[in-house]
Image 1: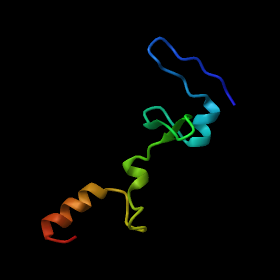
Image 2 (image 1 turned 30 degrees about the horizontal axis):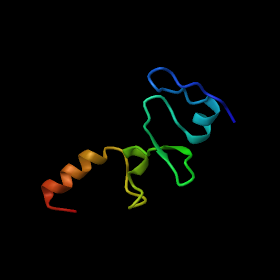
Image 3 (image 1 turned 45 degrees about the horizontal axis):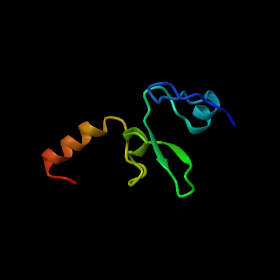
Length: 77
């Protein structure tokens, strides 16, 4: 457990161990909300790269946008 200070702009710094455990890197987005027990919860928001292929495992992630554009032009998918 870590204790962090809230700045005048209501900002906090996430401790390194929390970021490491959740896989949060600079530039990532997190979702902040209050749960039923009035606790503040911080969750990492998955990026498009992490979500890509989750509904269709095995579909190549590299050049995904270009491949989708080609398929649309050919009338596929």
